[in-house]
Image (tube, rainbow, N blue to C red):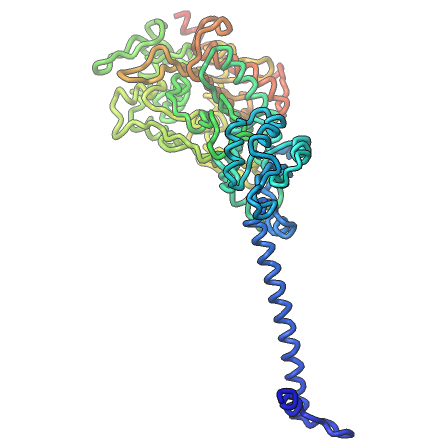
Length: 577
C-alpha cells in the first residue's frame, strides 16, 4: 500500500510531452531538498568527527596535541636580546605520562606490579623516590610522572613494555642561556603562563596566536649581561656579601643594556612552586644608597643658583640639628669648597648645601627624578620607595641630601644619574629594544650647564677621590661611591652595610650609566678588610667597563678626557689653604 501511494504521489509525464512550468519547479525543489539533506548528513558526520578529535585531545590518554590543534595553537613566541640571540624559546620535548586505562577496563593497568615498575623507573631516573612512585602507580590515577625527559630516557621507558607508561611529545619552554638574565625573563608554568619577569609582562603577545609574530626583542645585550653578572658574582663572593645588583643603562634612550640580581635562579627548573632567589634587588630592592645622592643634591643646588661659586668655602665642622649631630667619617678640616666636598665625600658640607637649598626645593628635585614612586620599568616587581611623609623637616632634608632617610631601588639611582649626565633629560627606563623614532623625548630636570659641570665633578671623583679604584685607562669613567648602614630595630645596624657605586662613561660624551650595589659586604682580604664602596663596588665597575665598552661601541682612547683643570685647581688651592 505504501509503495503504491508513493508511486501515485510521483508525477508521471506522458511520453512525447514536455513538463509544464509548475511541474518543472516541483522537480527542481525536490532535487534541491535531496541535496540539502545529503549536505546536512555530511555536516553531522564532520561535527561528530571534530567532537571526537577534541574529546581525545582534552580527555584522552595523554595531553599531546593533534596536528589540528598544533595548527590552531602555535608554540609560545620567542624572546631575544637586541642582537637576535635567543633568550627564551619553545622546543619539542618528551614527558612521562601514566595512563591506567591504556589496556582497557581490565583493572590491571600494569603488566608488572607497581613496585616492580617503580624499581625499573628508579634505574632510569635515579633521583625519583621509589616508594612514592610505587604509591603513585598503585593509585590508578592518570597524570604526569615526570616532565622533560631525554630521548634516551624515553627509549628506556619504551623498552619496559608497559603500555600505561606513555611518552607524549609536547612543546616546552627553554632558556638556552641558563640563569643569565633570569630576573628579567622570569619563567613559564604549564597551564598558567608567564611568571615574574617579561614572560609575565608579554604573556598575551607571546601566547596569543593572532599577536605572536616575529620574536620579541628586548633591550638587553646578552654579552653585556654576561659580563655584568660575572663581575657582580666575583665581587659578591670576594666580600662574602648576601647579594648584589647591577644595571647598565643607555643615558640617551633609557634602554637597559643589562640588569642583574644575585643570587640568581634557573628559569629552566622553576615550576608551579616558584623559584628560590626570585627577589629582584635591582628593581624591587629598596635601599638607602648613601653618598651616591650627594652629586644629585649638589646638582639641584647649582640648578637653583644656591651654589654659584665653586671656590666658596663651606663650614665642614659637625652640624648640630635638633637632638643629633651630623659628622663626617673622619675630620676633613674646618672648611671645604664644593669640589673638595665631593672628592672627600663630606656629609657636613652636603648637609649644609641641602639646608641652604631648602627642604621644598630638594624634595621637588627628588620628585622630578621619580624618587617618590615605583621605578618606571616593564617588570612587575618594582619596589616602592620609603619616602619621608608630609613636609620634610630640616633634619630630614639635610640627611636626604647625603643619602639617608630616603630609600630607593638601584634603578631609581641609574635613571637619575642618566639625567644628571646626559644634558639634564629624564627618560623612562625600558627593557624593550627601541627604534630611533621610538625614543621618548623625556623631560628636563637639570639645566644643560649643570649637567656639564656635574660631568666634570664625577670625573674628578674617579681620578682623585673615593672612586679611584673604578677608573679604567681610556674609558673616562666618572662616578660616586656610597656606603650606608642598613636600618634596623632601634636605629641603624653598624654591622650591616649597603655598598654602591654609580658611574657613567665616557664622561666627555656620556653614553652609559653603570650602577652596582653589594648587599652586606664583609671586610675580607680581597677588599683589604674594608666594607665601604671604595673597596667593594668601585673595583667592580673598574673591571666591568673595559669588558663591556668595546661591545657597546666605546673604544678606549687615552687622547681624550674631560677638562677638569679648573676644578683640580680649586681642590689643590683649598687643601693648601
